[in-house]
Image (cartoon, rainbow over all chains, first blue to last red; front, side):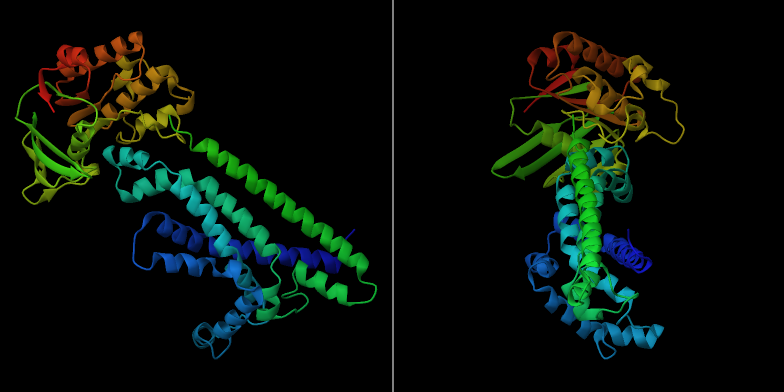
Length: 229
Length: 197
């Protein structure tokens, strides 16, 4: 069984992953909606920028976050002067790194489900007297919900596994930024850490597996839910 | 209360033109597939914007002279060619979608759909789904009805059933109805007048 310290690592990982996904969710949905529905110049560039964290080495993403959130950085300076807070070496920073890395996967899943919505249903709703906002809340959003949930679960799994960007951005601070992958890496560096590695690795595999199965089930449900007569 | 249309629209390589003079009852828009009949209904409903012309129903301008009301303010009861029931809502919720809050559903008792309220749209037969779609349009308190091939892909018994419903709407509810069909028999039986496209 896990020791108290290991449980702390698991709980911290869940907290970092959970907060990352919850905060990223509305941003990801807005971007997915924009990419699925809007036409604007530079759309290809926006699409590419969102997908960058998927292809750029995570260390580079972490370094860019570090530049932005450092006390002298664009975002860091603003956070410091307005709120007196810094996310460096904090779990909040780890959540930001995880959120940025999860974003492309979340946008992708949500965009597919928004694109799969039969626009004729929205047209039908508008002829029944529903304005744009009501059409969105009662038709578009519920019909894209399975994709939103699938994207959230996938993003959560990605956030749990985040390593490169996190360690570059907020370093490995036990109890604060030491999530599962960072703890496994640290344990591997210590003589006699194999047993801990085994336990934490088993937990990681289990959590990821649960997330992937949940995502797959939700995606299948999405296929059925969109069945239109 | 009647339709007064004069519309032109270019969609791709096709020019659509339709002129309907004011007249009572059920107007049938008759013509071969691809003539743009559905596009005319979409323009009356506000789902497609005409290039030029006007749409007036019962004296109210819905399009033209600088007016272009959005679909949600046109009060059209539009029954599409495919039922377009919302798949994530049960039949009852589909029927109530356009109805004012708390409005009773008994206004559509004559459609014989009372026993379907708790069903999901995907479990309905073609005829049932069509009747629910008609009921949903009627419950939205429409000022006029647009029916797009309401009898297509139905077997004979269902067709007769829906035809009786349409006749009832035409004769008793006295709503102006614009109906699209490519079936001469349907057009002659139901139409107060026939506009060829």
